[in-house]
Image (cartoon, rainbow, N blue to C red; front, side, top):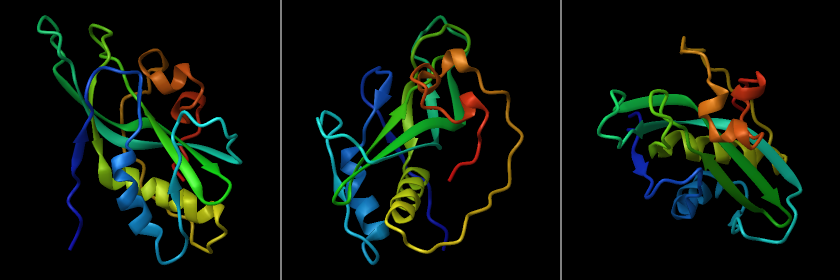
Length: 165
């Protein structure tokens, strides 16, 4: 039976988010192969690996005067950082409304988040795995000026590389 996508709604309007409460799901996804530890984004330790990819998310514009209420994106920037000893963290970047330019209220698709992170952690740990192939969907062009990941230089769609894994 296929997993149903669940969305974890962010609180507040920020340019980026971390989801440490989803670490248990990530750890469970790789637990038969490796042991991983969540590392705070505020760490002073330098990462030994960094990978930019994307996840799926929904956004809501809370500007009552704006005509663009809800949008979805399969190109929500995600940056994963690996640390010695199996540590990692992941930062998801917000997007702005194309009509009023306000930061969206973000809802994360947990399934793609866990999948992307688990795959990358396995790769970094040297676990032999086949490269995943996904059918590309026709989507509107990525707008760098609305993507907080592009502004930080962390968005693969922003620099033309849409290879998700």
